[in-house]
Image (tube, rainbow, N blue to C red):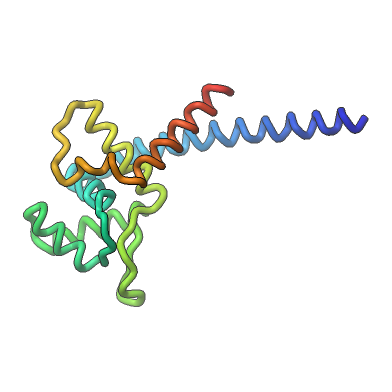
Length: 156
Protein backbone atom coordinates (compact mmCIF):
# COMPACT_ATOMS: atom_id res chain seq x y z
CA UNK A 1 0.00 0.00 0.00
CA UNK A 2 2.82 2.37 0.91
CA UNK A 3 4.71 1.50 -2.28
CA UNK A 4 1.60 2.21 -4.34
CA UNK A 5 1.19 5.64 -2.71
CA UNK A 6 4.84 6.41 -3.36
CA UNK A 7 4.49 5.36 -7.01
CA UNK A 8 1.40 7.56 -7.40
CA UNK A 9 3.21 10.47 -5.80
CA UNK A 10 6.22 10.02 -8.10
CA UNK A 11 3.95 9.71 -11.13
CA UNK A 12 2.12 12.93 -10.21
CA UNK A 13 5.38 14.80 -9.62
CA UNK A 14 6.76 13.55 -12.91
CA UNK A 15 3.59 14.62 -14.75
CA UNK A 16 3.68 18.05 -13.12
CA UNK A 17 7.32 18.48 -14.10
CA UNK A 18 6.63 17.48 -17.71
CA UNK A 19 3.70 19.90 -17.93
CA UNK A 20 5.73 22.68 -16.36
CA UNK A 21 8.61 22.17 -18.78
CA UNK A 22 6.25 22.14 -21.77
CA UNK A 23 4.51 25.31 -20.58
CA UNK A 24 7.83 26.99 -19.84
CA UNK A 25 9.11 26.13 -23.29
CA UNK A 26 5.96 27.53 -24.93
CA UNK A 27 6.17 30.66 -22.80
CA UNK A 28 9.82 31.18 -23.68
CA UNK A 29 9.07 30.67 -27.37
CA UNK A 30 6.20 33.17 -27.15
CA UNK A 31 8.40 35.76 -25.47
CA UNK A 32 11.11 35.28 -28.10
CA UNK A 33 8.62 35.61 -30.96
CA UNK A 34 6.93 38.69 -29.50
CA UNK A 35 10.24 40.38 -28.87
CA UNK A 36 11.54 39.67 -32.34
CA UNK A 37 8.42 41.28 -33.80
CA UNK A 38 8.03 44.16 -31.35
CA UNK A 39 11.64 45.34 -31.12
CA UNK A 40 13.14 47.56 -33.77
CA UNK A 41 16.47 46.62 -35.36
CA UNK A 42 18.16 49.38 -33.36
CA UNK A 43 16.60 48.15 -30.09
CA UNK A 44 17.83 44.63 -30.83
CA UNK A 45 21.33 46.02 -31.45
CA UNK A 46 21.17 48.01 -28.20
CA UNK A 47 20.02 44.91 -26.32
CA UNK A 48 22.99 43.00 -27.72
CA UNK A 49 25.31 45.87 -26.78
CA UNK A 50 24.02 45.78 -23.20
CA UNK A 51 24.43 42.00 -23.03
CA UNK A 52 28.06 42.42 -24.06
CA UNK A 53 28.96 45.06 -21.47
CA UNK A 54 31.83 43.90 -19.31
CA UNK A 55 31.45 46.64 -16.72
CA UNK A 56 28.75 48.17 -14.58
CA UNK A 57 27.19 51.36 -15.87
CA UNK A 58 24.18 53.47 -14.98
CA UNK A 59 21.33 54.51 -17.27
CA UNK A 60 22.52 58.06 -18.01
CA UNK A 61 26.07 57.00 -18.86
CA UNK A 62 24.82 54.10 -20.97
CA UNK A 63 22.53 56.45 -22.92
CA UNK A 64 25.57 58.63 -23.67
CA UNK A 65 27.61 55.59 -24.79
CA UNK A 66 24.81 54.33 -27.01
CA UNK A 67 24.35 57.79 -28.48
CA UNK A 68 28.01 57.83 -29.51
CA UNK A 69 28.28 54.17 -30.54
CA UNK A 70 25.14 54.12 -32.68
CA UNK A 71 25.43 57.74 -33.83
CA UNK A 72 22.03 58.83 -32.57
CA UNK A 73 20.85 61.75 -30.44
CA UNK A 74 20.98 61.19 -26.67
CA UNK A 75 17.22 61.62 -26.51
CA UNK A 76 16.78 58.74 -28.98
CA UNK A 77 19.18 56.57 -27.00
CA UNK A 78 17.25 57.32 -23.78
CA UNK A 79 13.94 56.64 -25.54
CA UNK A 80 15.17 53.24 -26.78
CA UNK A 81 16.53 52.33 -23.34
CA UNK A 82 13.23 53.33 -21.75
CA UNK A 83 11.36 51.13 -24.25
CA UNK A 84 13.58 48.17 -23.32
CA UNK A 85 13.00 48.94 -19.65
CA UNK A 86 9.23 49.24 -20.12
CA UNK A 87 9.23 45.92 -22.01
CA UNK A 88 10.88 44.30 -18.98
CA UNK A 89 14.08 43.44 -20.83
CA UNK A 90 16.41 45.61 -18.72
CA UNK A 91 16.42 47.03 -15.22
CA UNK A 92 17.93 50.35 -14.24
CA UNK A 93 17.61 53.12 -11.70
CA UNK A 94 15.20 56.02 -11.97
CA UNK A 95 14.81 59.50 -10.50
CA UNK A 96 13.97 58.07 -7.08
CA UNK A 97 16.57 55.27 -7.14
CA UNK A 98 19.65 56.65 -8.84
CA UNK A 99 22.87 54.73 -9.23
CA UNK A 100 21.34 51.32 -9.95
CA UNK A 101 23.32 49.80 -12.83
CA UNK A 102 21.65 48.74 -16.06
CA UNK A 103 21.33 44.98 -16.44
CA UNK A 104 19.38 42.46 -18.48
CA UNK A 105 16.43 40.80 -16.81
CA UNK A 106 15.96 37.06 -17.19
CA UNK A 107 13.54 37.73 -20.04
CA UNK A 108 16.05 40.18 -21.50
CA UNK A 109 18.68 37.45 -21.51
CA UNK A 110 16.30 35.08 -23.29
CA UNK A 111 15.53 37.70 -25.92
CA UNK A 112 19.20 38.66 -26.34
CA UNK A 113 20.07 35.02 -26.90
CA UNK A 114 17.27 34.73 -29.48
CA UNK A 115 18.44 37.86 -31.31
CA UNK A 116 22.01 36.58 -31.39
CA UNK A 117 20.99 33.13 -32.63
CA UNK A 118 18.66 34.63 -35.27
CA UNK A 119 21.52 36.76 -36.58
CA UNK A 120 23.69 33.68 -36.93
CA UNK A 121 20.93 31.55 -38.51
CA UNK A 122 20.07 34.25 -41.03
CA UNK A 123 23.75 34.81 -41.85
CA UNK A 124 23.29 38.44 -41.00
CA UNK A 125 26.29 40.57 -40.31
CA UNK A 126 26.80 40.59 -36.55
CA UNK A 127 28.14 44.02 -35.70
CA UNK A 128 31.49 44.28 -33.95
CA UNK A 129 29.91 45.46 -30.71
CA UNK A 130 28.26 42.07 -30.18
CA UNK A 131 30.86 39.63 -31.49
CA UNK A 132 32.16 38.91 -28.02
CA UNK A 133 28.66 38.20 -26.69
CA UNK A 134 29.13 34.50 -27.36
CA UNK A 135 32.22 34.47 -25.15
CA UNK A 136 30.56 35.96 -22.10
CA UNK A 137 29.83 33.73 -19.14
CA UNK A 138 26.20 34.82 -19.20
CA UNK A 139 25.73 33.52 -22.73
CA UNK A 140 27.51 30.26 -21.99
CA UNK A 141 25.24 29.75 -18.98
CA UNK A 142 22.13 30.66 -21.00
CA UNK A 143 23.23 28.36 -23.80
CA UNK A 144 23.78 25.52 -21.34
CA UNK A 145 20.37 26.12 -19.74
CA UNK A 146 18.68 26.16 -23.16
CA UNK A 147 20.34 22.90 -24.17
CA UNK A 148 19.35 21.27 -20.87
CA UNK A 149 15.75 22.46 -21.31
CA UNK A 150 15.60 21.12 -24.86
CA UNK A 151 17.01 17.75 -23.75
CA UNK A 152 14.43 17.53 -20.97
CA UNK A 153 11.63 18.28 -23.43
CA UNK A 154 12.88 15.64 -25.85
CA UNK A 155 12.83 13.06 -23.05
CA UNK A 156 9.13 13.75 -22.40
